[in-house]
Each structure stands twice: as C-alpha cells, then as structure tokens.
Image (tube, rainbow, N blue to C red; front, side, top):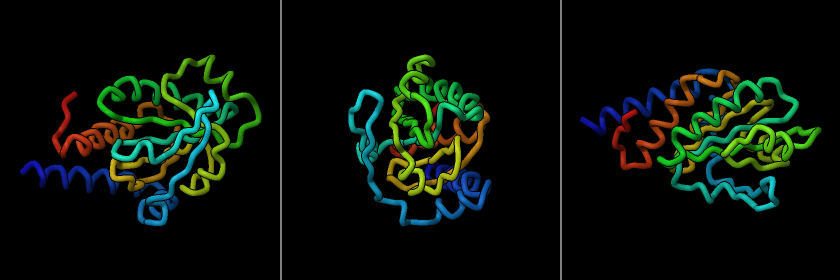
Length: 176
C-alpha cells in the first residue's frame, strides 16, 4: 500500500513538474542531463561540485542580483531551506548573467543556503533560459523538471521538498 501510494505521489509530482512548460518537458524527459557533473566556486572561492549532492534531494535556483523576480522568490527559498535542510534538502543558488556583485547581495540578505557564481554554462546544460530558473533533482540524480516562476510559496516547492525527503528516507512519508 505504501509503495503504491508513493508511486502515485511520484507520478503526480512528475506530471506537475513537466506539465508547466515545453522546456520542463524536454528537460525532464531528456536523459542527457543525468550524470553531467560540474564544479563552480561559491562566494568564498570554495569549489562546489554537483555530485557532492548525490543521494540528496537538491533544488538548484538560477538567479541574478538585478532580477526582480529573483528578489521575490529567494526569501521563499530561504524559508524552504530553513524548514527542510535538517531533513536533507539541499538548496544551491547558481548565479548567472551577473553584472554586479553577488557577494554583496548575498551578504546583505543573509541567506543561509550556498550560492555559486559564473553558472551560465551550467544553466545551458539544464535548458534554463532566464531567471529565476529552478531545477528539481531527485536523490538518484535524475532531473525531475525545470521551471521558471517567482511565487515564493509555489506549491511545487513544498511538494518537491517533502516527496524528495520521503525518497531519501526509504520511501516513508513525511509529516509536517
């Protein structure tokens, strides 16, 4: 019963993630994105590699300091991070198309999840065409979908976090 319920939940998530745009459908079904590893530096110059997150539910958020939609979304991403990081959700912001100083922006907003810079080539790997862009990655490393929205409380965020954590915990449902 639990496996059947989880299968239904995962299928629903997959449909929701892939139904919103042609770009997400292409990315979610394109296995060429699986297994592509990359390394970018965070604001302290420390290299961060995607494969370090293997086995964890990971949300990549592509952003820029000049993006008004990112300014709307990022506080909600911080809330999501605060709520679920202890349970294993990994959030990584990827700065792209930058024309200012992401380190100043990040310091001023005191976000607790990490960010990496100069991610334009990585954005291309996922088909991210603008900001904000969100890439949902399962613990297996499979890209579940690519989205672009600015609603800081979009239901896909919470759903991805809870269902991804359930996958990490051996398919047990999580309670809130």
